Length: 315
Image 1 (cartoon, rainbow, N blue to C red):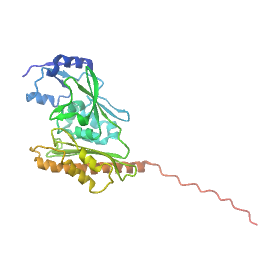
Image 2 (image 1 turned 135 degrees about the horizontal axis):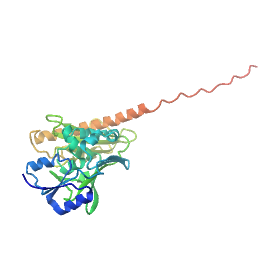
Image 3 (image 1 turned 90 degrees about the horizontal axis):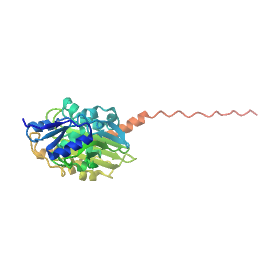
Image 4 (image 1 turned 120 degrees about the vertical axis):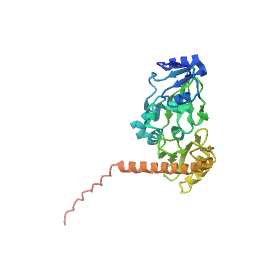
């Protein structure tokens, strides 16, 4: 057993003070689903654990600036089950539903999962595709970081040792936008993906041209990957049958997987193309389903009233 101190600050000010006291030897713990395992494996050996369990005010989910604000201490299960998330961003609720087991989702926090920076996690590709940012705070103030730029390497982020994720912000999605997240499961439903892909697709008013698109992948590199070259293939182009397959092939150039028991590097690369195409097709189906639902919800037009015709007098 490696001895360590255990602090339970009541607010962010106390958290920052403790982190300043111990410096890089302190570790934040929220749900602990990843950190405890790493400590048992002697991969990390903190001299102080700073529990966030008593810190209040950072676990809410609410509408903000037309988008969604998710507190860094919100659990995966809270996002999965949120009526607000399911109504406004059902793809995100579905993504969090894919994470591990119910027991893990009940404990793991949104901010903790992102700070852990495991490239095989489910949420990062979806959040990247949705254009999410994270707000982080320290004793010196706060800053906002695009999730595109948040991950630096395997289990590594741009966070400083004294910074905490307090909020994840997902911007309002444009009209005619559909989103999808899919993962290729090697064994069981609660396993890491062999390959995962998220796509957020926006069509123009005519519903015939791709106005914008964001594509991200997981489990195929040392960080989650945004496939910008694949996006460029589609952006501004008319919808056509072969377009999504072409984007999938382009996405293969962005990935850099390793061979493991889930598949060889070559196999994962090929699957990246397949799952990008499928994610785009599912996002398009989402757009069309939304349009269909809106059309069905419109009240039927009332029949026009017939004007009464006055009969003339007979001569």
